[in-house]
Length: 289
Image (spheres, rainbow, N blue to C red):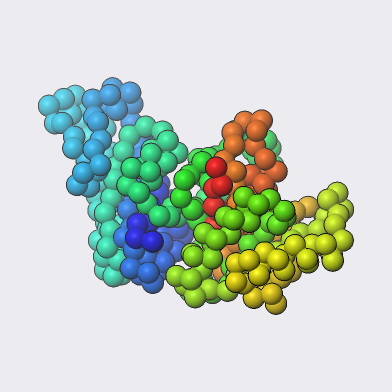
């Protein structure tokens, strides 16, 4: 794991993600790539075509004088990104930045693929009530569609260190079980222990003996400690995941998503988005698609 992409809108939540990214980057000697997507008007966006070389900017100057307010705004944004790079370097992490124009999640996903990043770390404000019934946030789209793992951070995490990871699943889907191998490799970077969690609900009730048998087999298949297997009862799956992880002081919650859009969204994706929205602990998602 060598490259970490960190989207920022300079909010406090983005700052929480940056602190987590710095901790991870320093511990595994990874490089941080900050990215900011700016909505500044069609004329300017059409005039500038951003390159992936250098610091992500090869901007023609011949018409910029026609947009003095935009140029001033971007100058401040560029300076803020440079400050992030300098602060990261002071912390002992190698860093660079990209200033891009247009859609937020589209740019982040595109840059993640073009740069070949190994991990995206981003802050999320979460959402509540009626907002969750409408179109997903940029964070949810990235969680659902990114080809690399994504860590979302909802609040400030003091003394962040990855030692205990809880992976929640139903342990029946062979594809999702195979995806656990990626988490095992991730955990090895931090010498972290993986705990398996099955949340038993009234609507999807399963005998504990059946759940335990499945989970023990998965633990054997991936060389995990069979003592780190948990069955937790709750009225809803996402509530059980969050409650268990927070009560047991885990450092990271991990889930698999399927990357479907619209009506094809699976229960796994909806659960993952709910956990991302509400969990106080950073959430690591792996996309199976």
